[in-house]
Length: 473
Image 1: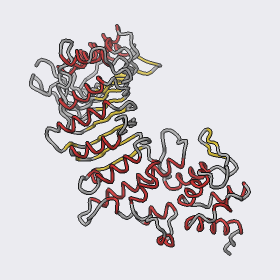
Image 2: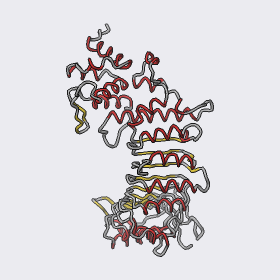
Image 3: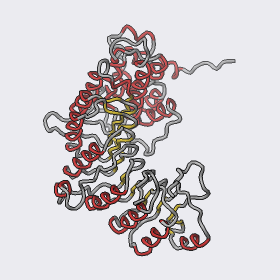
Image 4: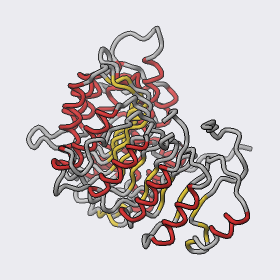
């Protein structure tokens, strides 16, 4: 026998419907006793909860006497934050944030907007798509999650359009991930720039994935994010992954990015990974960050071909003079993995380290830094010599990844000698991916290099089948 619904549940469902269709019931809801009010909140879908909280935050119910303390919004009208957290966990049960959100209402709508954009990106690439991205209809699946009901279709708001969701909830987004389909100039740029302008004061992280970026698109994005009055932006994390710039010599792109990087006082992480960047582009990035004395803490240029990018940073070069007195004091992580670096790059990087005094983590793995033998792409001891110099130039380093650099076994002796005389803080040096046959004498030599009981040197185990073969005679 089916259990009959309680009077409270019936009343709560009725209030929910009224909230979805209008505002008339809100003054009466505000008069509810605290215990009934808390029960009502648990019955409300996101749209109704949003409307109620917005009205109450606007003081439409008198003075709610709210305070926001330790992530809990509370007062005589209950704890909205707990309800938003439950709604988030129900909809995205598999999502775990590294840091527990403080404001679950913000986190919910941020994830919702991202879901709408991801769905739109899938529709835009279909051959049948015509029109503007802002006119895309959101699927019933997403609309049902937020509490949309068919009887709401006569309202002035068009809940089914992507534009509505971006306008109403876009300001909650602190992080946005944009795929290539959302960066098409003909159908998307105007709407995307409008979204970024709307959020220019609150957006902290922006990621472009699998994108082909035109000069006009880059210009529009950069200018949308910058304050018109001060020409500065508040982006903290910028990531462009597995993407490319459409022009072969994107001089206008360089100009815009230089301006953008120089005006980023809040920028702490810059990732330009697998973007087909050349050495001139890499040099431009480093120079502009250095000249601005950027507060960047993470710089990731992995997966590009920037060999020679620091060739003018030797101690007599013009760029070294240009950077005199300048430094990247906050830079802690530099990733140069798979950048086609050579012997000269190792030397130049050593000279440039004077500008990066507090570097802690360096990744130079998957670069065949060759010796003076010159067939190309053959291993040598230059990586080991660079690492030896590195230990004295960057004493704050705690982790270095130098794996898959085709070093010969004699490199190990050079590195161990440098470790003995170094007085730094190195805790981990990854040397995996080299085709070495370790002998018992090597094991005893390595035993003295440990940190908190763990080995500092991470060595290759057995000869891996996927290790590049060095056939230098």
